[in-house]
Image 1 (tube, one colour):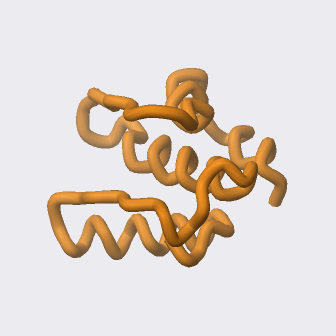
Image 2 (tube, one colour):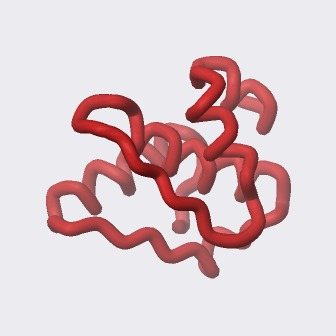
Length: 82
């Protein structure tokens, strides 16, 4: 999967999050709107384009379950090691 192909399944708002690779990004949206999808795609896109080193990425969630889900999603997107 290429870096650009990671963006194909995202809507325009999610794509804006995924391609904002510098600085912090605040994602405010309701439950089930794709926040985690946008954030995991941002990390995977950054790793694929070489902007992020997997060992230097820190993603924080509120629960251990959410962290495990994020790890699985990142691995499935080809960004293991984050």
